[in-house]
Length: 453
Image (cartoon, rainbow, N blue to C red; front, side, top):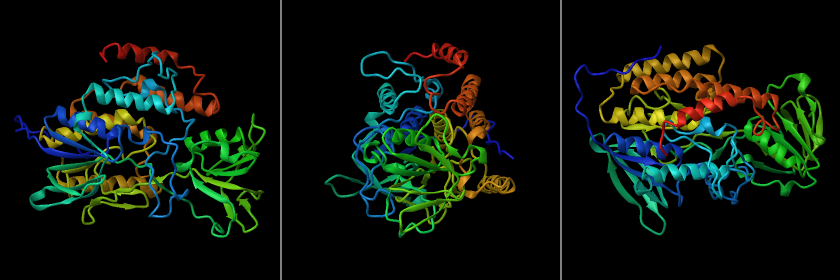
């Protein structure tokens, strides 16, 4: 049961708070804008040298290609060189700053653009709303924890400088969740002689020239990377969960790609055995198996934990009841249209911090969370899918919009998400360049005409 925000019958006394935002990716940028618009004083901490977070491409990869070594060199970005968005640009943008097609030199005007165009859009957004002036670049938060009087102590470290301690009224965690690889358990992997990497460290196909590659997973990145590698590899074998039996075998339209059920075991002679009984001698295994949430800087005395990739307890995926409203998270849900959701979450947080909107009591929030967890369990949803939204995102977005007195997500945006999903299933190799929802594009462009950017 959704618990509505408690709105005062008299005008609330608005509060301006000093807020630390951790991360200057899409979540941190829109959080900073909404906070400042609500009258808060904002500092954004960004360990990199520019805004954009995971959308900042680098050819560099980590020293441990599967990401298990805690002492490995950390690379924040998971982008591969050929990546294009898997959502159309019209649906991706922030509500009042549309991701419009730009025809000038150096821009990618395609409807499903490459990653650099998304970065440039976020840079444009930061410039338009003067967010860069709030960001401390090259500064990593190494500790954020409760201090005296309900304040938050934030310790940050800049390059070649001693750590600095500061006190804030609130902390918003915007550090993303595409950094710490999640790996499956595979019997025999410790003696298998081939090379492994997680998709986090995939960049280009050339190292797989004439090799036999097994790729585990069937997410968007798995689909893209398998096709990228197939341009140069001898064979690409995709091991995926919950595939229908009639889809197994050689992939239609591809001479060197096969679909299998999940990997059953691997062996010292280099063999990879699938649950469907087939086996191949492989040179590489690429794990396209997702990521684990990680907040190594955050000290909550056990109030917020990550258990089998459930970050909790979080009220509506945002506020931990015991520490609300002065600790919050933006961008935890996945399988969503991200930027519009980040914007709504940020509006809600900013308004709660200013006392314009009141949260339910701690007890009511915990009750709501327990009811949510019970519903997941009753439906057989694994704990690790707690934040996987899919089609549930629209009801969630509209609920937050209600709290904020903000218009619901446009109907065309919802329909475009559905149409893209159907088109992706129908044309997995060409959905980014062939589509049948031009009527929705027209509706979007009519809406965009209302915004001056």
